Length: 341
Image (cartoon, rainbow, N blue to C red):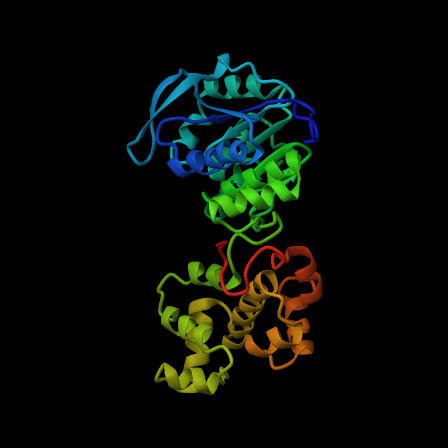
């Protein structure tokens, strides 16, 4: 069973990606690219990468692209190495294959790190690796993971979670965040920053950051999409008058009818959604800019920093100042762009 992911004074680590038929290609290629490019930043081949499957040979991904693989049982993983279970539609069949589960369990025994990308968490769960641990997977499958494996403490919000050497990540591109975090754990923040610049991605979306915003969660729950255009307009006009009367006029409805229909469609009041959108906008500004909290409160529609503070405490349980301290990326990210030049 994996031990805590401490730094190992070694020349090379093996990173093995475990795949199966109908694996999602980006679950493999995203983090694999991170480790490959890390070697360029480091100036030597610290990470050796390989792709493995139960029987070895070519495996068809969800895109139709074939990946050549080694046999999982022949990998010979050891303490410094990392085993990553990838996700995709085929993971559910793979997690029911006793041969795959046995091979995966055996390969993970000596690994310093075991991880999953997206729904790869189901394969780790089938092996018993996630029992009594915190874990995350793609938001659409968090409930299913929790129901199938009640001994797992499923947290649906974070982008990735590390629990004593066991790493799990959320949907698809979160595997890149997970791989960047592993490189940082191995080689420090400076290397991770250089690598992020090379990849033209956010330096690192911290593991505690939500998979997506509260407004997007609400949109996903609203099956009819009746108010999607209104939500977009609200986001683009966040400093305008967004009281019920104003929103009702925009929808050509009476305030009473609008409030009733909106609550029935979304499960919450218009005022609650306005607050959620403002918090989402303020969160992004706190992460990506050096603007003062007072200025951010103004441009995100709160009017003053005390009102924003109360909304943050209601929505996410911490103050704007505490949020910035935890997730600030402004030291490495330009104010005008989420990407590096």
